[in-house]
Image 1 (cartoon, rainbow, N blue to C red):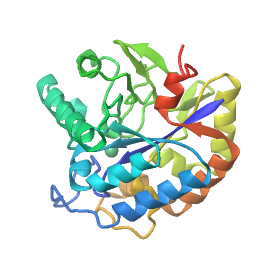
Image 2: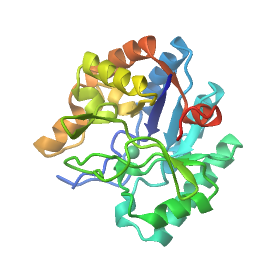
Image 3: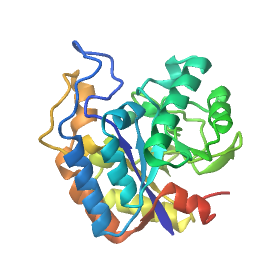
Length: 273
Ligand SMILES: [Zn+2]
């Protein structure tokens, strides 16, 4: 049973919190390349391919970085162009942002992009125009639904396993069900919050049911010394708790479980339904 390894490639300040102070549009990121290099080293060590959802704006500033990821045989997918919340966009605004991100990535990699992940899980199942726009743009899959309600995002009504939706395959964030509650465990904050043993048990539980778990991490989560946003206490906790443990935890999980990119698992037919 293979699990899915994914990263959202964006700069350290790309987050969609309510601003707690002045938030310049573009701050640059002089640690992104070394953080991504850490991720690539870890993938090489475990001989695993991953899906990298690259933000269009970031790809424009760091085209060489995208080529380096591609040179290691990883899959490049889209994380939108400017990290806007889909929930705040009109269908026309979203279509333009999507198109811009796809053309930037295709021009750097020379390949058609197959997958999309919305910034900050900002999509709900009832937003049918979003899924139709992805299918119309020729994508094969989406990974934007978060099937549990959280402080910031999520859709409790979304399905928990990969499924077909509007001509695409939808691959939602991984959750386990405990006493009727859906518990996310493998993405960003939840990955950092929970101990390794809990995450490993949750992956085992999904795998025993024939389902893949999907890990979702960002370069900044591999950088305990990196710059930090000025945030309110709850949001600061969400953004930065246990950053120093991310790399070790992922290293152990990659040694314990089998992982692959979304594209590989789609092609082999092992993901869906
Ligand atoms: Zn993001």
